[in-house]
Length: 150
Image 1 (cartoon, rainbow, N blue to C red):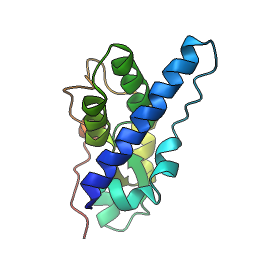
Image 2 (cartoon, rainbow, N blue to C red; image 1 turned 45 degrees about the vertical axis):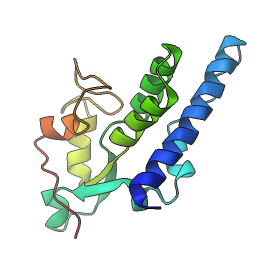
Image 3 (cartoon, helix red, strand yellow; image 1 turned 180 degrees about the vertical axis):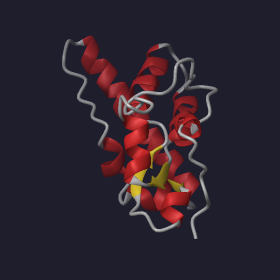
Image 4 (tube, rainbow, N blue to C red; image 1 turned 90 degrees about the vertical axis):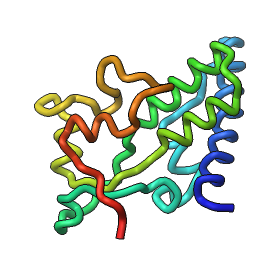
């Protein structure tokens, strides 16, 4: 099984977990989701979903693993779509599409996250769409070009 298949099959497991969370929500029980689920369910996560690095990292800056779409966005958008009746397989494909890591520098990460920069630590730009949007939109706005791994 290749990495893409592994990520998709793991995304299906996440969909089942999110469906369980939705059922708990209907019963008035805490959803029980946390963004760290991504790093625990597929370990080591970077071995499966890392797709590149920034120029600063290529030039020697210490690497910081950055989810190109914040995990909390992936979780809540997946739950929203499942609650709307979107088929499990389609939601799993969207999770796999957006579940990517790029190694960037701490300065680049701070720019994306901070209010002095883009202020997109746990969000995507306005008008970004989970179903059709570019996973790399935050990096694009930050002017970070993604280079292939060595």
